[in-house]
Length: 518
Image (cartoon, rainbow, N blue to C red):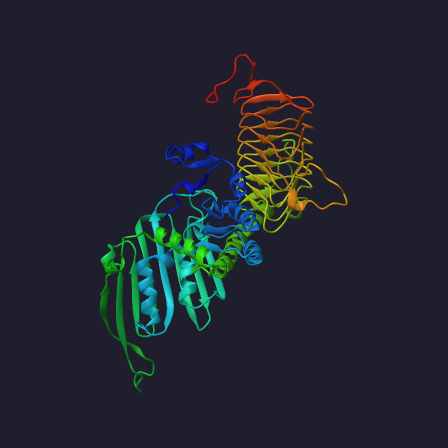
């Protein structure tokens, strides 16, 4: 696609960057470092869905053009914020609804536009396979996005009715989804998706007033698209309602001639994005379409959540209930009425006094305790433990298995990677020269705490620093500069005193440490 050595690759997992580095490309572990480079004008967000909003928002704020893999984000509210920022900054925002760039689907849409089957009235889609089972998102968000987008395209806009059911067989997320949509003009769609099916089935049937179009992506290219015509018997006195008469295969379409240079759909999609960045026109899969899809996903997810909550309430109402663990790890076990219990959600568990704002992204298995506040846009990974009286700002990002003890504020610009431990009353900052009468929101500096690092109680982390992987900050320290990986530092200001192993054992300065030590 012509990026060449101008491509900068970001991944928090260093092992994923080995091949990129071998090809001579610039690689970083913190995407914010790449965003701060003035020459970076275009950003491709190909990360877990729960991080899409935060990364895209920060990129748009810096007037970057942004491509986001599906889904755009995890709520319509987040999508509206991104679209508003896109317009404010004059940026290009495009979502990866890749079926729009599939040559066979493009031919299908052309046939519908030419009235090949009359007025399209119903779409039936099966996207089934024995595939990868996900723990971080259900089959709705993982598999149904493309079919919702195409249904919205065919029927001319956002759905008006949503009915969704699902079943979680292998874990806590739904492996099977059945989604029914209604559109204006008495048009309907039925979408079935699952990764727990004995064989691959990717078939879409569009039913019109005079025929059918069948798109079967599991077949060879020359057999993927078929058009059938049907006729009906006209009403008579003996038969007052019309009835099917004949059906025949009208034409079997091959898209081999359309393949051109043989580009795959992904290459066509990304080239479309780059072309829109050049000519500054609206992408085919733009933020308007993304919002239409998000509206359906959010309504469908709410129905799935309501079904789970109903089951949870029934269980709590008829049995003794074990209350959540307190933030110090002690069990609070006893009988309780439902109203006194913070019901577990399908995603995470929060105490009844915690404030979780709409738009916050919280991973599965995470726990948020008494009087904590998570702002909209904040990202908290799976299996995190957020103690009492903790504040998580809108642009803060926490990885997986992060532990934040009591009385900590994680401000905008702070990024905590997987397995970071933050002790009680740790202080993060984001401005080095604050004044009450001077607003410096546009001058926030980032603070990056890499994987496995520990920050001891009552430490202060002055903004603009990076703490290396598995570094150890002693209690009460004031960190004013970068800390190297595996370093043991403490004091005011914090000074290098030795090394720590991954398990937290001290190694002297003279001995040093191999970063592969386990």
